[in-house]
Image (cartoon, rainbow, N blue to C red; front, side):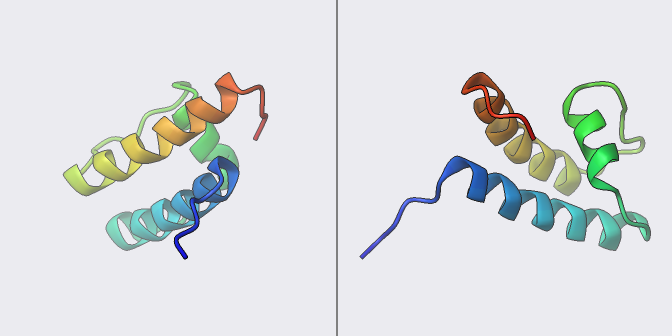
Length: 73
């Protein structure tokens, strides 16, 4: 039976996928704190590749949905 992923589980999965893609793209790791700064608009990723932008967009969508529900990450 198909099970829908809870938003927090989805966020954690997308976060790990993003961090893996970031490391493969830029050759260095991004910390959870840095990633949250990017999602909050306090920090930018420059230059940004198309794949990073798409992954960040998907992650940000779930992040802001969780924030709207009052869930702090």
